Length: 134
Image (cartoon, rainbow, N blue to C red; front, side, top):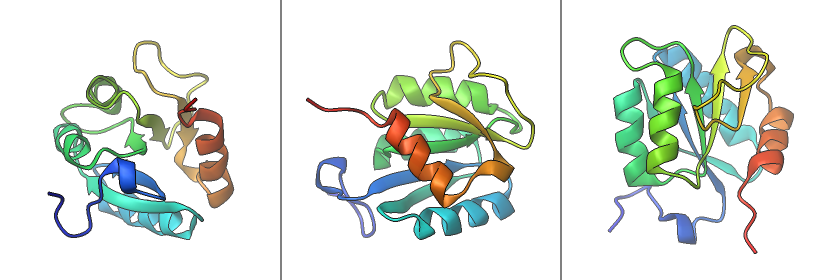
C-alpha cells in the first residue's frame, strides 16, 4: 500500500514527475516549476542516480528530469537504468550545457538546457513524448 503522498500510476490523474539533480537549489526550482504547470505534480526528488532508480521503482513516475552532470553515477547512466527499470517513464536530460541531440543508448526522450525549462516547455515535452495508449 502506498504511503501518504504516493499514489499508484493507474489512479494518478496528474503527470507525476521525479527530479534528479545533485544540487538542492535546482531541485527546489524544478519543484516550483512542476507545481506551477497545470496537470503536473512532484512525486519525488533524488540527489543521485542510485537514489533516483530506487525512488522510481517505488513511485513509478510519468516523467523524470535528470541532470546530466552528477558525481558518481552520471545522468546518462541514470537515464539508461531508469529506462530499463521504468520503460513507460519519459526521461528528459537537463544540463547547464547544451546537447545537440540525445546521446545514443540513454533511452532519453530529449535533452533540454536547464535555463530553457518553463511551464510551456514542460507541457511541450510531455505532449511530444508521453506514452500513447491505444
